[in-house]
Length: 211
Image 1: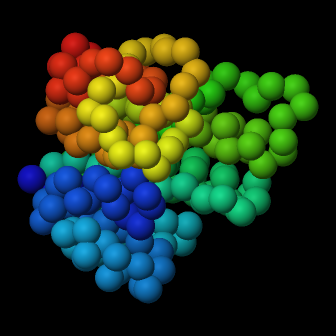
Image 2 (image 1 turned 30 degrees about the horizontal axis):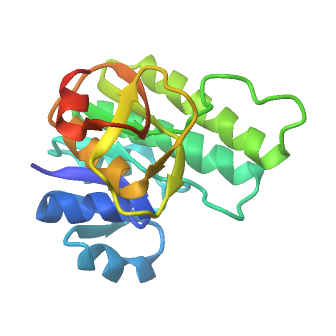
């Protein structure tokens, strides 16, 4: 398989690359991040998703088996970049997928997406949730085999391999290791669904198979 990971230097993306090995291609904005992606066992391609055109990205993803959108503006970024990365880059990747004929698309979103930000929410967090919601809405309108994954609060604790993966789950946390493992499993089980993810008591293969 050949799996394109947008946001290839992110913490979940690097974990996913380690699981997929040479099948993974990580897209990175900063050339200085290439060695980290390669150290994870993947190939790195430099591509700034805030500047690239759909045709440019389509040329990169053409022939891939799937795309994983794991990009995000990250901590410390303002509201404007939440829109250009968390929404805009996802739309760009989906455009490229359609142009290149790549049908399987897994989007890593966030718990809380799909609902308006609560009154009084911090401006940047509100922009983040709004961007994730709009990215989800865009993807659902497309003729792709899309899966949206909404993880709960992310931790760096070692993965347990045990999760709760359902259309709606109570708030909770989940190790990044387990998010990556769930995404890897979903790549071989394409479909159109939105799934929330927290730690639980179901082994990942069983949790994915039931969805």
